Image (cartoon, rainbow, N blue to C red):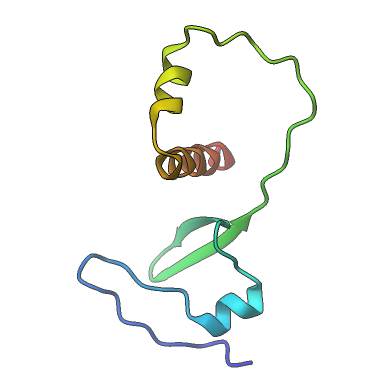
Length: 92
């Protein structure tokens, strides 16, 4: 398969991962992707594996402001926040 595809970065700095590459790597909607710069001119994209944690005793979060505010967010924003937190956790 052709592993090189040219794309032009849009005005807002966006681009799309080309279909042949997504298909080859089996990238799917909802995958969590980590973007890392590799200077001077490369970006490495890694799909993160999301694992269910082992059973742990859950703390009582009744009245916890973070939890209450989190659940008030629309699901799309909850997902983006969790993806961002996972990426930050991966970098530590």
